[in-house]
Length: 307
Length: 307
Image (tube, rainbow over all chains, first blue to last red; front, side, top):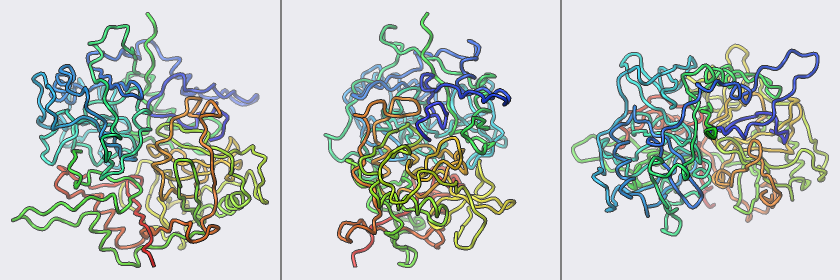
């Protein structure tokens, strides 16, 4: 935790390669140190990275900068089609970030807005879970979890499943994005969205429809001033953060996009990342946990190499 | 997640009573709703609250406001005696918050400072765990945990223990405060401190000495601008947040203190709080998790009633 920089005392959920410090040198006479996280990523074959699809990417533009969200159409197809419809109609433009509750969520949009919807809906049937399917490319973690029988990763997203009901769902980890709803479970749809900025609120799993995760810019959301109203709502219009834009990346000219690659969560490199986080073997660690929580793993993202 | 205010969709780790919304009304014809968290706390006998001891309380004063930290002398007696010595000598005055890593920690102080120490040390032997003892008043949670055989609460702090080694230790939950160290496990001591502002980095348990937790003001730390250097260090002096003061509450006149009470974690009221969080029974929840993570519970704090 000191200013030694090189020791990977910890990494955020979103790992930009540039953040990783230099590898600690093996002391002479010792066996070579196991690879660091940075070395594992540097050694990844090209095929272990995937291009993030601009058609499934949202840019939320705030005065603080661009927040990049990857959508999860395998898990919430109706919500995502709807959110894209709303975004393309300019629905979110001029709405605001209305709520920042410490250690919980940032929330934006407005389910009662009369903005144009482009044929989109203000409420939709919940998409909480779905039966096992090969397309999820679910890779389980062997580690015990407080909330679910099995956790793991599905197509780049933290997820869980239940071998009894054979259902799979996304999990509320830091940076995940969901569609706020009212008391009626089918009152979500996307006009209000939230991102998790604290300890994983796993009690929300299968209670709200998750639609994706923040690939870049969660730090911008997490550093917003907290709201002082009930459950973190801003109390005055002046406090609200204006949404300068919320659009689909594919609708922008290539020159205006932020092309990203994400490490495939069903790759050998990601398996090595998980093992590296489970057993911290750098010199700083006195004791390796030997276990990892599905919400305590980096899901590596990097700028797409210039063609 | 809508602006209905009354639905306790979630609460931070630090719960101020004022934050709790109105209780949802039972719909006529239905059985009376189970008590809400607010109702549980309102009904708590006076004896279920304890006064937070000013001799074990630090005030970290930043331009953003006062951050109140309760120390855990049962767990780190040497570190805490040392930190109080440093604080009383004015060691931290004029040092800074030097690091804000998103979803991880805020760090302040300087282990290489030549500030007066008042006889305190810049490094101390680690205090990672200790044998079971009655004074811990450890109350176990039955819920499974990824990282430890048993989790629970000890004297107001989230903790874990191992029935094989009969050791107990504090756990790295949101808001916990620790003493940064270098690679040598015995290089901590308190001149550098950190607070957790993201997903519980439980891999740090028993790797760094935890000294307490933030009772009030963690939102001020968590909203600080992120550093853009390696592992979140600020890159320029201008970015650093000056420490206007870090002192022991008992050294201030009573009129300048912020008197707080904390709910006893070995009380019946706290057991009811845990059960309330494990089984969300308000109308918003479609499905109750039935489980709770030791780092996903509020540890209620309130202003001490005026005498």
